[in-house]
Amino acid sequence: MSRPVMSRSECGERIHADSKRLYRIAYCYVKNEQDALDIVGEAVYRALRSLDSLREVSAFSAWMTRLVVNAAIDHTRRSRCSPVDQEIMENLPDSGEFDGLDEKLDLYSALDLLPADEKAYIILKYFEDMTFAQMARELGVPESTVKKRLYRALARLRRHYGMEE
Image (cartoon, rainbow, N blue to C red; front, side, top):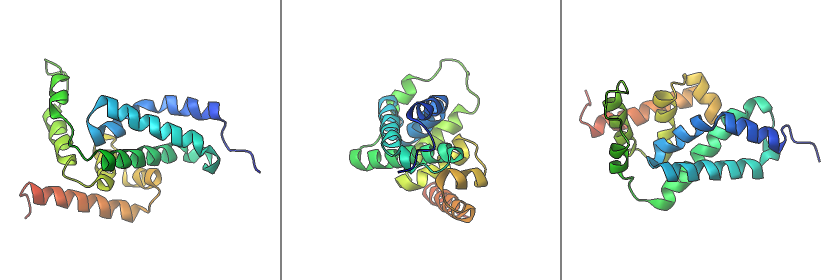
């Protein structure tokens, strides 16, 4: 049996360093702090359990992203209940602390219209500001597939909001 490319302690350090980004991705799916933390926790558990399957240290970030997305999709399928928007509203700052907050809230609401597996493309592109090439690496699919799925999700949102040309 070959030695894993990364020890559990190294894995923990990398997860800790990337924890805010992983949390943001999970939060975009559920819009609930506790559920997002549960999703990240589940992804960390899966990572530690299957650390031997990681082939290259350089692929760790993409691997963890896929684990978080998959855990979020699993959570969404299990819960089948819509997130509470009231919690978001209660936690908003009183002043104009964030630029473009209205647009972000609209995008959060729009995410609920998409199937769980399509949300990843919107989240990585518009919340994490990733390029198509970065998204392809993170999700482990060809760049052309990323573009196709992102544009399909955007078209679905346009249809829903009556913005078809």
